[in-house]
Length: 89
Image (tube, rainbow, N blue to C red; front, side, top):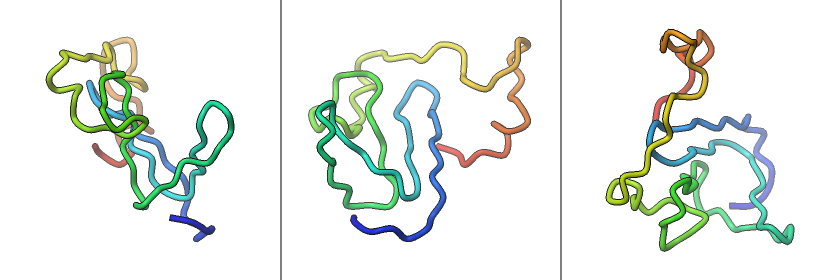
């Protein structure tokens, strides 16, 4: 995927899973080299076990990867207002 389409970027942290990146985000590796995207939405690995890193291949389901408390949750565990309106995983 190349070019700018004007779609806003959203990043959703899936509980115990990947980061979903939607929109016109430019992905680069540690050296700053662009990573090609073939889709408007990509799932980025957070568990470190993906065979197709930096993209998710579902390995987190088999490794027991957990993210702990969800980002955006209040101290009581209730989702923050913004998190409740965010796109789902």
